[in-house]
Length: 474
Image 1 (cartoon, helix red, strand yellow):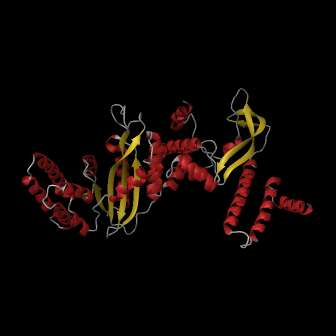
Image 2 (cartoon, rainbow, N blue to C red):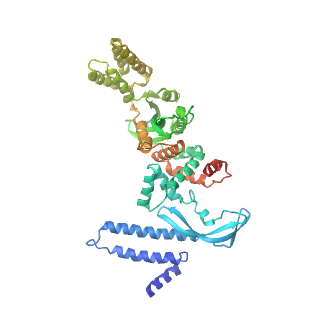
Image 3 (cartoon, rainbow, N blue to C red):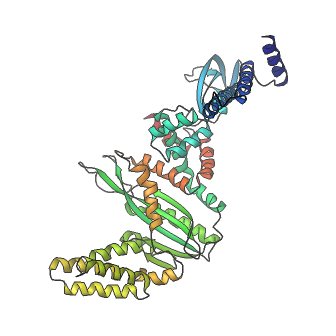
């Protein structure tokens, strides 16, 4: 007992900012660490040692954070804020979510005369998100929310980090941080783009966009849509993804920047994002060869054809899908398909020869149905023939497929938003897609700095936040 008191006295004398409770915990930690260091492999496996070490470090860390928070509490009998006086109330306990888990601390409360709500100066020094989440913990949670459904995110944070947020806390955190991002995205993105480097080996930049279906809630409508949501059946609508990818002289992909958007008429938000990205890259490196790639959807090309590109490319594999449909009317359809696929991909006059082959099938067609379908396919190839010079594109090391944007559809939308039973509101869906896009593009760290800076300005009287608080109170 005397040794215990002696050690605490020495610690207290040399570490004046640490309270007796923490010093006692520190002493216990050192004793436990000493015992762990002497572990015997014959009686204890290392997994047990590892888990015990993590538990002790976490417990000490939580107590250290409690001490740090409580040290900020001056305990004054009264304070002044915004020119008004506040008198002290009895202290109360509070819990916050940190990277190490839940920290419980005691803090002073103050109330002004005639006021119902109390003021807690210590809480305000912590810069909490959604009232109870520290910023590092919030950043980790948002990274996970972009990857996992909220319930799985909650379970992972508890199992791996000792945090215990409710699903509703994570939902509110997503709403608050996305609201902040919406308000500053247009200001933040030019700065973030300016900080990024274009790969030194890059010779080509490919610009692409594509759509993927996502299920909305029954009462939700795409942005700009006219009419009402369907009264029966599933409300599936087309979301969209865009990519800017950089390729070396051999066509190898070096880097990809991507964005996902919830359903919107004419994909206006996505197109705006792509235009901004393209302009930023061209300003930095104007000598890059710019290639636009997409499937044959008219809306895609009504946008892409107005960009200043060096080459327009119809995705080769979509072209092959139409070629396969045409082969159904050939005598030896498999041979016809593979022969014309090879010609289309590898011969400089490939598209002209393939158009001739399809025209021959149509002219020999014996039914009106066959003639009609082959005419549609023929029109498709004629419409896009200037985008099908695949042999020339390949010889220049340029991409001929839109596989990158299609993979982005799967990673941004398919893997996160099309799990069993999922359906989305427009706001919640865009929140997830925005942060998922930032993470996949390796921009989340920089974006987070802007987000927390904007959250510092949150106030019901701030125009950026007035509507947020009104919706929250509704």
